[in-house]
Length: 175
Image (cartoon, rainbow, N blue to C red; front, side, top):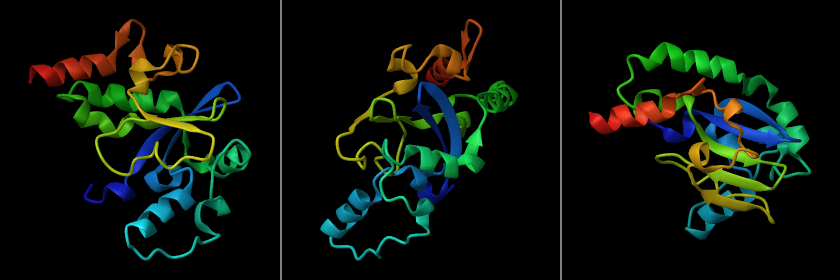
């Protein structure tokens, strides 16, 4: 896709101890649009005022607005098993992670601990535009997050004893 900001991305959310998966426009996951907008202005760009119909009228998605935001995002929720099936269907022809990268999450939003992790090859630095009091980092959360935060049982690419993400990375390294 030529315009990275218009692509659909997969995001993992931890909310009230449960893991949820979403596939939607990347821009919906810039948690604090005011900070994003302010940075454009600071760099000399003219940016229109926030449109109240944009992103359900929520300027900053934080622990207070999380429930409203996630309720509004229901149409973009995707089941882990659906992603697993898509990966299984494409795995045999994939030469590396790049061939199936659209299935893997670029962001982990942890509403329980007020943390955001981003991991992606390009585009808006999602972990930078976060609510006040939150922590953001660029980290390989798929592999580096502890089991109590992102359980292996929630990772659609782990099937039994097989870690398909690891296998894809190994395939890519050998090509």
